[in-house]
Image (tube, rainbow, N blue to C red):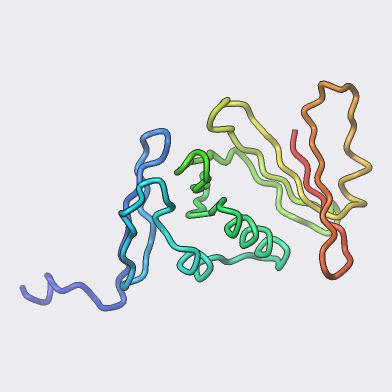
Length: 164
């Protein structure tokens, strides 16, 4: 019976957090993790903990996530149909993922359709090479909600992201 009560040394611990919508999430944390409860407005996970957990299929995605983390916008968890973020102004925010169009060599871009947590609107975010994005962006009026951001990376390639 004692063997049944023992917790394996390699088991994963979890930190339970509650998002803006009241839903609880269990974040996997390392054995030596101690949450900083001195400041309830601070992210429950350190940058060091988050950096060690980030994985990506492409180096540019990893760079974007790490840069966002350095600016205070932290990716805490990515599930099949949700993303859990820590935002400096809003705290813990859960974003529902509606659909993903993965990157492929024909489209030369990837897209993710999400449900905006504050407005409940469907928002499509797309990132890719400038040649794949810029010729598809149409601003038909000044009231268009299309925003395009272009970033020149150190390797002299251009990464564009847009949302509508």
